[in-house]
Image 1 (cartoon, helix red, strand yellow):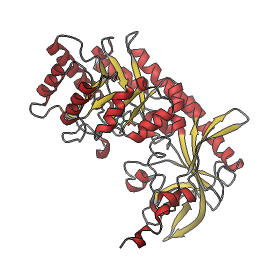
Image 2 (cartoon, rainbow, N blue to C red; image 1 turned 30 degrees about the vertical axis):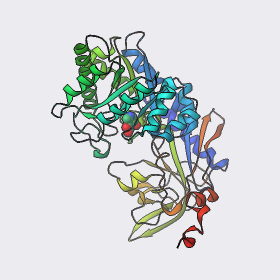
Image 3 (cartoon, rainbow, N blue to C red; image 1 turned 180 degrees about the vertical axis):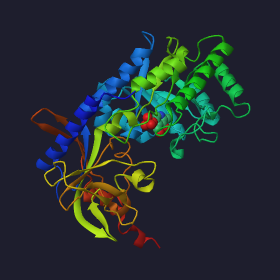
Image 4 (cartoon, rainbow, N blue to C red; image 1 turned 90 degrees about the vertical axis):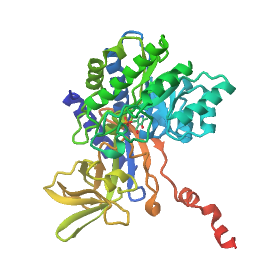
Length: 450
Ligand SMILES: Cc1ncc(COP(=O)(O)O)c(C=O)c1O
């Protein structure tokens, strides 16, 4: 089921080399006390593993588009790298679409899903020819009007909620009875409505379901895909032709945040899908996937300087520069989003002292701003570094502006046995930018309003 240990060990060795080089090369220091690091070789390897996993189970010639969920790493160079690896992009807002376009992702490999697309967004998507999945009956009516007024090359689909149930994280479970996404298939009359909606619209050719993200059991995800496939078969039987020609199965492969091993693997999930829904892979259907977290999480590290080491009530506390601003989910929902923390010394070498229980705290002004509570680690001292592991997905795209802490710089890295080379992925947010974002251009306007 799991990835070989040696791949995990190689990935950890690259990360350790990058941490040391980031300190030596001054990427992190007193003036830049927190940075993000991305392992380019690791990202490429995950993209390859995804492609190969589906190639192994899909009939020869099956069109498969792996559209990376941009929300997981809304960084133009990352979208570009993945595009070069043959992936596309799933976008869920005008901003994400702009990033995909800036990265050069072709319209034919872009998919727009969002529960609240405006008429202007729909119009733009249809003009560009990118695939669109309608979320609900009202959106489908909008598409009726738009497709009547101008021809489009966009493949058009409908998102459904197979209502197979949720996983361990409620906020990311999208196939519950009352989830806000898609047409709730088990609601009274919904299935019949969907079949009719397709029969009435020969241009509607796709079904889409994203059953959930982190915390979903694979079997439940596979059941959601099976329900979606069975609906596609029912529609095609009802209309007497292969009108639904593509099934978009969403993303959601969970990530192991407990060790360096990638588990479950794409191969395990693809095989489970092929066993659960063999008809989906026999060549009659094209496939779209929308994985996010599983492609990036293990290849990112947030590295923060320890500013002070102190204690309170007998508890050791390392006060670092990584807190809620870079790890909001972990700080506010630590049970759902625990992170491994690795201790490095002032030179960026793994710290080896006696492990002691300690809090790893962030810089934000509220008591709960803790990345790890009572965690046993070699004692972190001022000038040391705390590395938040597996933070390549969602952490860089969910910056939290509290306390006006700037977005940190992010650097991609590539290693050889003797060197580590870095390249910027996102510049650190400057204080003038931060002031502008916070209304700096309108400093006197409120006082002048009477
Ligand atoms: C529609 C859709 N597709 C794909 C994803 C990506 O999920 P994951 O990052 O868990 O693979 C999400 C996540 O929210 C989503 O909402």
